[in-house]
Length: 155
Image 1 (cartoon, rainbow, N blue to C red):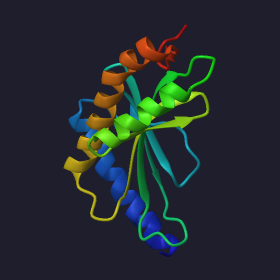
Image 2 (cartoon, rainbow, N blue to C red):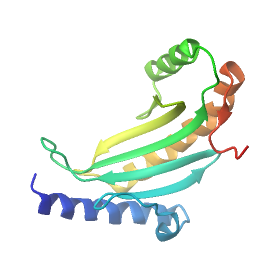
Image 3 (cartoon, one colour):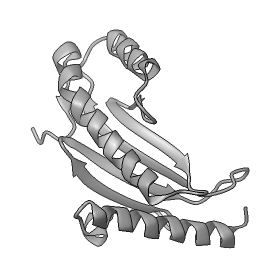
């Protein structure tokens, strides 16, 4: 995909995300976050989960820009995280509906990723809501079982 088409597709996807954010009752400009151009980013709170939405241009071999929605939900407690990792993999295999758990450094995240080709507003809204709902649902349970702290806790 050439840069011109990728940027055009990225702008279309960004307008779609802006519309979804408005439908959620938020101002897209107020929740925008700084990311390297031409990528775009937004951050919003869904329950106790801080959900970040990213759009990035297509890379070599990709047919469209990519949408990534991620919610870091907890900082892992010190010690051996094997039990936590096993539990996260079991939750992934149990079917979380278009999202999955992962690790980024010392954080557990909920993530959904999709190409923007044929992206529809209802799908963006579903993924934002789903990432937030899964993060909000499991953060307390995982902390109770394995320790750690919520990423959104200031302390």
